Image (cartoon, one colour):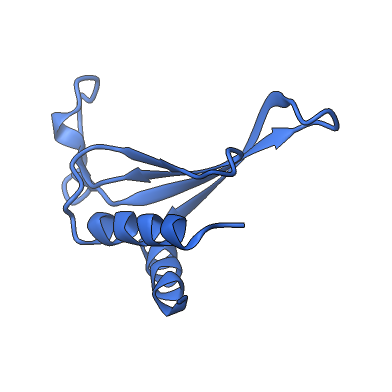
Length: 103
């Protein structure tokens, strides 16, 4: 369950990501600590240190979001396991539009 403020915070983060206003990865976590959104901005792959060659037309890695759910056991303790779901631009837009409809 998210609070109104948390929904607004996520919506604002997604909006900045979609508008290319984010320059570094940002982590958005919530009062409920087992859910995290990691927001990744566009990256010019040619600027990465360990990259030797980039095929023409593939220079930019587009935005994406990792939705992470950290698993807790029956004793409500973290067991170092998590599920990650990657959202790409079209899914991010759908999530953002959904969050805009919430009041």
